[in-house]
Length: 322
Image (cartoon, rainbow, N blue to C red; front, side):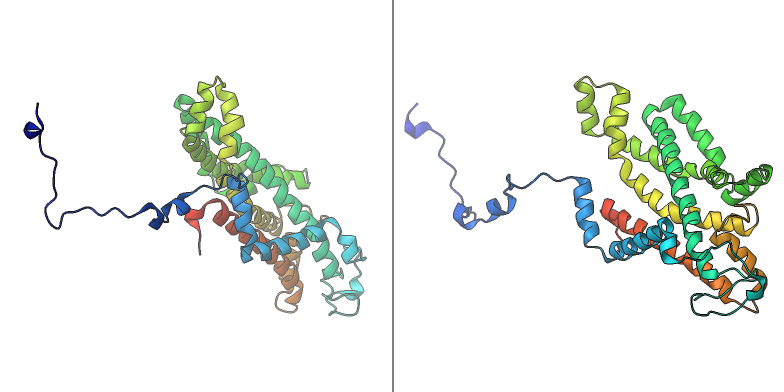
């Protein structure tokens, strides 16, 4: 075949010429270049980097550190025995060494507010730990196994979810009024509080088990249970941590509500809920007796709610409020 019989090369018409920029004039290479010398990062490292720059986290973190310090070392804050009461001081105003005055029984309000921090915080933290452990385990098994296991556990979750939280706690606590301890309140709150965590854990595990790392781990010979506890649950913890942090404040409020109703902690235990309940009879004549434990309760709950919002923004950028 001669050169004359070959198909002639395509020649663009006027105005259809292609323009290809020189390589040295395109900065995309510098933009897309990966810095291989940079240290490896992770979701938790990115979350911590975000939290450190969040004013909400800083403020709530400082408040929580102060609250924890007061709960651990109340004797450093006040030397007064919260259970020492003198009727001669009943409803006396504030004075030197007693900045909050006295309640109806003549007890120092400041000392009872300080020592009540340990009780309320202990109930909130212990309940949250038990709720997260039980809810995560049940929700993870339901989401990972699927089938009849998921159907059975989901129906159990629905049954507990249909029971009003406080109403169920009041009924159970009334049944065991003979025993009075912090653990009784903690276990009852955990009994009705794990369902929300279980539902969150189930959905998070169902999403995580379909990701590539689970398939790759299975292909390398890993067993299903190893995948669940070694890979899937750690990668599904972000929403569980968020709901646990936010719920801690609600458990403190629930304990105070139960103590206020007279079915929670025994009257011999110093707690904010018990002091609020006893101060309600003097609300019209001496409202400050009710104000101080109520303000301590509000600040504590607000601190954990703010911390939960900050953690949520860090671990789930799609749900950021700002």
